[in-house]
Length: 344
Image 1 (spheres, rainbow, N blue to C red):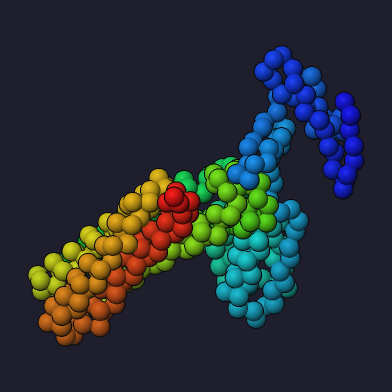
Image 2 (cartoon, helix red, strand yellow):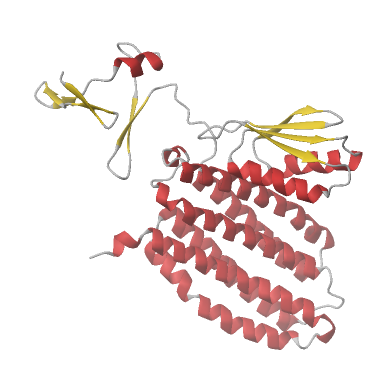
């Protein structure tokens, strides 16, 4: 087979054989590097931009390798160090070493607690008085982007419904549990953001994590952030319900429940529109936002009948409105992701 070099590319001619099959030869060096032989199977993956990727059977796209080190003084604020660790996690590092001279008991406890609660796939592989070593053990695909977003949305919906139920029934224990559940959404948000940032740097990762196009990564980063904020507002509803001093009047509860049903219904529909890439459902969600504004005004008026609790009720109503607005934002992203489908 004739072969020429141009701009460091290995160019090969397509051959036609058997009356219906097109073939090309593979470089001997590539075959040896991947320990392939006659009869070995490879994967062919068609990319969105028309490229065809040849993947050897044992190939696993790895995340950014390498080790990052964070130094911590005895008087450092642990929250600052935790923010640095999360930044390195999101940047794709597989080994993160935190050094101190030495750690205080409180610092080590807070560090390990954050790792266990927030960093998916991360293990503490070394724990001494002056060093904590974290290793991220993620490979692709373990949990696809869409599956993770579905988990996040299910947890968020449950938080929202429980928050309104806790408000209605004055269930203190239920309200307190919602804040703990919020950290589960936070850890998935960090996990998805890490994957998507890696995919932006290496577009070939997109298929491994369940996306059709690398160009969609930014949109999905925004979606996961919107889900996380929606969960934050569910936690805020629960927190503000604990501050109420008096029983709410029936008409106030009715309006809050009405607003809640509409807002969480919009959120549910917007996520389904995303999973199904359904343009028409996304449009319907956006159109429902005006109803939310109308009910919100009514709820505020009724809440004035509870003057001692009005400030907290106002915050609860605002959280319900923000839930609907975030749902509308997700729907807008669905429209943008499917813009080509409406082209005539």
